[in-house]
Amino acid sequence: MDAVSVLQTVLAAIQSGSVSFNGTEVNTANATVPSPTAAAITPLSLLQLPTLIAHVLSLSVVRDWLKLFLIGGALEICRRLLTSSWSAIKNYFWITVTLEEGDDCGYWLLYWLSKHQVFRTARTLDVSTRTFRIDAPVVSDSGEDDTTKGRNISFLPSLDTTYYLWYKYHYVTVTRNQVNDGPWQTKQTLRIQMLARNHDVLRGLLLEAKKHYANSSENMISIYVSTSDYWKLMCTQHKRPMKSIILDPGMIDLVLNDAKDFLASKEWYAERGIPHRRGYLLYGAPGAGKTSLIHSIAGELNLDVYILSLTRLGMDDSTLNSVIAELPDKCIVLVEDIDAAFHKGIKRDIVDPEKQHQEGPESQVQTQQDKDSSDSVTSRITLSGLLNALDGIGAQEGRILFATTNDYKALDPALCRPGRLDLHVEFKLASKYQCRELFRRFYLPSGGNKDEKDEEKEQTGEKDSGYSSPSGSVSSSATPATSPSPSAPSSSPSTSSSDSESSATYVGITHSSRGPKLSPKKAAELADRFAALVPNRAFSMATLQGYLMTYKTRPYDAVDDVSAWVEKKKREQKAGARSDAPPSGSSDGTSASSGSSSAPAEAGEEVKTSGEDEPAP
Ligand SMILES: Nc1ncnc2c1ncn2[C@@H]1O[C@H](COP(=O)(O)OP(=O)(O)OP(=O)(O)O)[C@@H](O)[C@H]1O
Image (cartoon, rainbow, N blue to C red; front, side, top):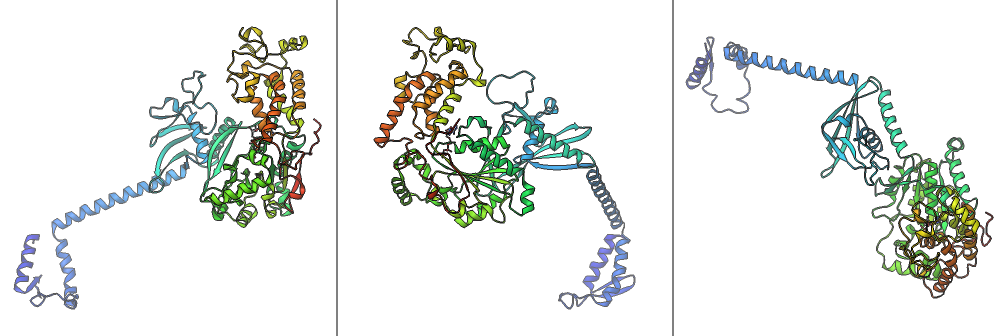
């Protein structure tokens, strides 16, 4: 019996009210209206079911479909088995890692890859001028020396392309992908697969990439800034040489040695159960070198700087805690103007610090009140939130905190206590020693080598005009005939001694080649004269540096004109214009916050420069 005849039999039986299968009759006359009870399977229909199935199976078309179904199923099972065993084999023999490009490790690897041989012959590439946050020459594909200034070109793996390379006899594939990271964001990832059984080779690859990167960024430090929930790399900067910072003798060594000692004594802290953290408070006159010193110390200790902005929009106690917890193990955390968090608004962004310094405490109070009434930006960080973040349970160990302020008195004693800010260092206006050293280092040629011609000149007592030929030697012929006197060259864009006072035009961009090569002896001699003419603790180092910048190539003029400049500054001071002069009542020129009486109670160890006395060089 075929399918059509079965169907016809069934239809006919339904019409007549009974169905007959193999001689057994089934009555369906009363089953026209299905109801829940009628639809229930009767014992009779159960008896008939095997027969029905046997009938259906006896149909050839059903058998053919069934065969197809079984064969398809078997094939699918085989496919799945093969796929899973292939991935099991791959898992067994291959190591796969995925890195985010924004992550430090991703940067190292991308930098390493950008220098790899495979990218010199690859057919599909991304060309980029990325600096990888470092100033090193990246890939020079052509093999030619590119002496042109500007950005280097680097070749990077293209997106969604897989590259094959060998690393220490291990087969490696590299794929750069772009994946969705939130509704409107994408992020780039780097997937590395390596044919290796254990992780040693992979670790070796990552360490090699890190070493490459570290070697190239040897002279750089990375600066991170806090956003409301993570640390964002702001820039990388060249390390500032420690010798470029001029402070009174012993000050640099004190802070630097203390920080070195701290980093080396992790176990000592652990044994005594003391949290491995150290805080420094640098306070005092603006432009005295607080930030510069921190920059140099970071370079010296090879630590990155994390700038914590307490007044940033969106920063509150909980976000402060979370960004502090995100800090790496060893780093420098810098909180500039820590007092600003406790004022309403950001005072120093609006008020000129030098003017404020000169105008005295009363005007500072007044200005602050003005600001308070007008500013709408407020810090949402509470004192207890800050204290907890600095030394609470979630505070990172191994970090060095540097806080700076110009307003020592504004700080809460709880913030200044040892354990939070352990060492307090006062920065004053420039001493005679600093003036002398600033001048000497400013004009000493790089390397400090004595030039023969200069030596000759020194002996003949010839006054250096401040101009030299492009080769660097001083030559009066290099000064055009229009120059009326050796000290007043007119061929340069520089101003004469008299107008240099009124104009702050910076002199020339090629000053290093045009500047005189003073011998160390001559430089020291001029520096002594300069220091003798500048009053002790009257100007900040930044102001003095600004003055010397207007005499970049004219050290002699700088000495000759300094008295007039000092007089002018004093007159300005009297007239109430901006100057570095200390507030009235402070005879030695120390900052308003100096003096132990004004220091917050229970302050940490305090270090001060000696008041009026000029320190011995
Ligand atoms: N002691 C110093 N030695 C060398 N350079 C200095 C010194 N002090 C200041 N300068 C120069 O002055 C400029 C400003 O210095 P810096 O920013 O370090 O001062 P600061 O004390 O942090 O000022 P502020 O309190 O206003 O932030 C820098 O260019 C720096 O080179």
